[in-house]
Length: 322
Image (cartoon, rainbow, N blue to C red; front, side):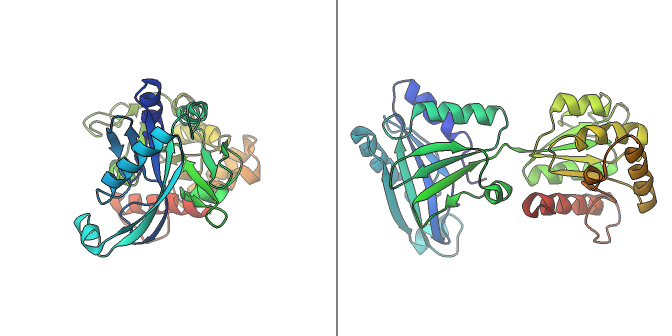
């Protein structure tokens, strides 16, 4: 990702250490800008920096502006044009323009607000940082901007006046059933930005040899999902074909805010599954959340292609809600 995800934590740490800190955030781009909106650079009072707002094109100038803004205790909005040559140096075909918001911690960006933001991030609570560049008001918002949260898209709301920075928890994928499809799906999901969990009480399936270096839970699926804590940034994928394993996990997932629930099986298998869950007391509106047979219908053949279909459907639901 282009965004330095630990920028708020680093800024607060430097501020509390007495070094001073400034957060520089890309708030708008035109053309082929090197970093997307929301990318952040943290600058300490003694000139140390972490993160990036341009891939190296304008960082030096931003550090000078940030140091001066910290001394004067003022917010700044900076515009930079990235030349074709500089853009090419960071892997782009042509240049662009970026707008960067500079916020000294303490004088402009309240340290208490940063602490609240860190607490929300640690608790995996989606939160938006909203700043009015005209009035200087700043606050955290949880119940607005559903489309921005779904798309992980920071940006301006009103003609360059109110900037909204989206802070979503990292995506997670819980796979129940350490089968061949899971072996293909896990590395694909990692590339797509998911933190995978593999759940299977059958030790021969959920072994280190089959999933080297991965997080494997050998508990029963309902216990594992309870331990993991399924939230709105979690996808649950069931691959066992075995009702003894799939159904307990489904009962947990359907009562959660998981953004995606998918279950492997034929149409006949899925119909039987829906009947069992209905008889277990799950109402029809919740049952409709299950994607089954799992994955987009792309004519997939074999575990790798089925994994592609599953990840594609997860992405569609995450970004489009259907």
